[in-house]
Length: 411
Image (cartoon, rainbow, N blue to C red; front, side):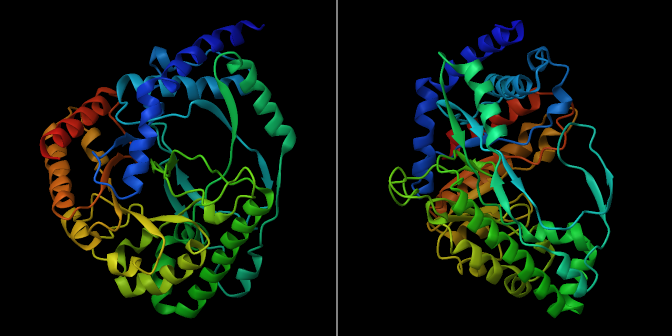
């Protein structure tokens, strides 16, 4: 056995101890109760960590040289680090999941941009997008995707995982989730400013563009169903709990998985600055086409939705709504009542300062808690979109502790 594999298996044993622990195995039930709209104690989760700021930490330094081993090592070490320093209510599967590899032709467009990369190891960068969809003729360049599973690549990844985990814990295959973010995609090809101007100046053109992108996503649904690669054991859906008693809707050991067995996820982030009527006209109807295919759905990301809950009622299977730091959680909870999970996105600016100050975190968390309690609205606290922690992991530790203490006091 290669020395790097011997070493990696030792880390795998530590990972398995966490994965198979009683506390970890219990957590998905908390998620399921939350997604059943029970008023359970709100879970606390941290995602999208700027790992690049922590690369000098001894526990995170990679020691393997083989690429496939290195990917597993990175996943294991980051998980161990998170459980040690900012665990919250984070849970991992009781088996190591290998994602099915695929090959796809994509949408037929190339992003043309000026990009300034982050220096903190996050995916958050600055972009200036150039318009590659200037007119109706250019919409013909949008192609419907084809897709196939890459069995050889999947098998290689599975074999590497088995080498690491056999005799320690099980290995399983993971599939794909739906992520309908047309209003993240359109600006990449048409420009943010042009999208916002053209929904006013050229509404017919933007409707045609939106229809093409919606057609593309509907074909993705068809392909995932055809290839039978949908994820039916997801713990998270874009950083929020996905476990539910309601999905899948059938015995998937006997019947093929369909979109009705899984979650759908949608958003329209640049519509933070448009009216409810415009938001409804240019997104909700198109999103409903896609959401209606799914079992349960989750809407919203960084766009404030506190004053737009009414238009979201168009989605008959909507279960959770994202409420950002720029939204009024009181207003949102009052409109949502006990019909949806309020996914509270805590302000990541509070972990970015040179010195962590718990007071604004307490005030933010308290307001959300009291509003949700008053309206019987199930909720959760998610810290994500973290551009920087000022190279201080303790900020995340303190954030988790502060939110946890505040929940204990006010829930």
